[in-house]
Length: 322
Image (tube, rainbow, N blue to C red; front, top):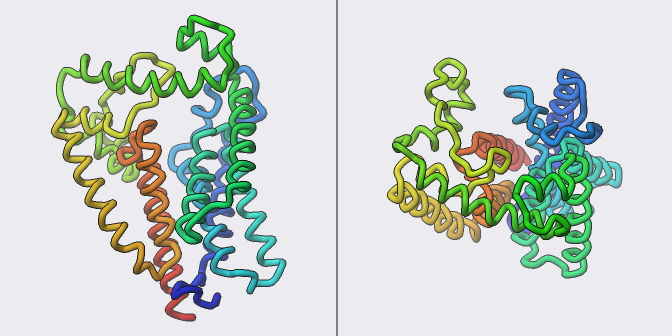
């Protein structure tokens, strides 16, 4: 078992990062075989990623976003104690985990994977080297541009959807402006066109999805998303809270998230299990990117948290045995 560093043992992290990467890769290969294509290799189909989804299996495919952060935790707790072969295997697992969002042409999953890894590193080390940050930013911009082209989302396509007056606007300006402005428009559209509240049914969608109840009783999830444009469905963290209870729902969700954040801040100084940092990083990233998705009414978010909880328990058991 790995030796403790600063009161925290890295026991179980190597198996965790290898296991998550292996399961994610296996799920991705199954989806590619079952559906007959890999989104990155498809051209002229703007929604190829949306169709790359086998019910139940895709949750395991996208769990790859957790592997880079687990890899960071392994390397910072290991500090070179393991042999070169073990370190190379862990690095390979991280690279495979980063390759899966690229092959799925999922910019969002790639950003989430990198953000979680960076957040975990900052939590552990207290800072992030400026040169690393600059280099990572350049790589992410390049990857984002490549994936945008691979999704057949060229400048003309995006400017056409958003009805940009200047069709020659560069894509790196079009996309941030499009998402930010459209989120405001979508929330405003919801407020104007919502005829009745869902009374918690929207926020409980993860329960209906993860248990399979939505297939048994489709009415549980029969609440259409109200957006300004069919192709642009990004919404803010408070979208479903308002859909359920109006302004009261937004206030309630804010209070719950504030309480959770307070408890996590108190727990940070007393963490003994390295996977605690992954829990903290997830909440931090979710709140940092809260303008762009509902997060907590998304079943994938709760699947990530469930996987993290399982890894936390595994590392705790390994630490006890060590």
